[in-house]
View 1 (cartoon, rainbow, N blue to C red):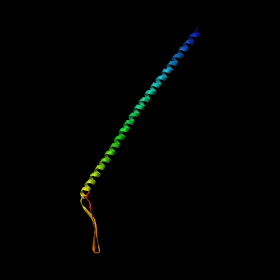
View 2 (view 1 turned 60 degrees about the vertical axis):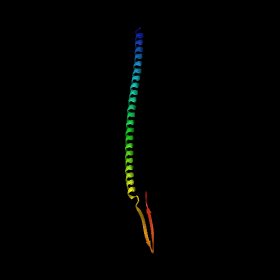
View 3 (view 1 turned 90 degrees about the vertical axis):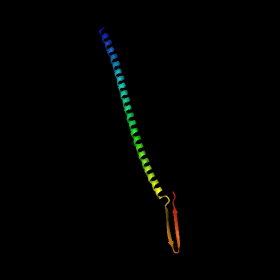
View 4 (view 1 turned 120 degrees about the vertical axis):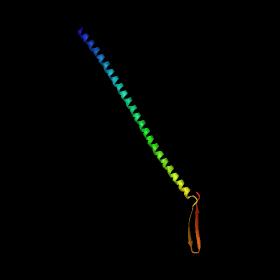
Length: 107
């Protein structure tokens, strides 16, 4: 009778230990999943910040290039307007005749 009682007590203890181990495994898995979820959220946040910074840098470079192009265009237009209508040419005198080459630019 004592043996049977001890055996039942040991079996009950074993069942409780198995249940406790399974609960610990479930809690460990939940913690692992939560840590993984937190890590992925942080990684996505980092990726989004990096993308925003890269976009800002690319936009800044584009705006600088566009501003430089506008400056070059304005200087070119000013230069073209200043040289518009000038007579450019060359001439040579050979023997008894005059050779004349005149180019009139009207751009």
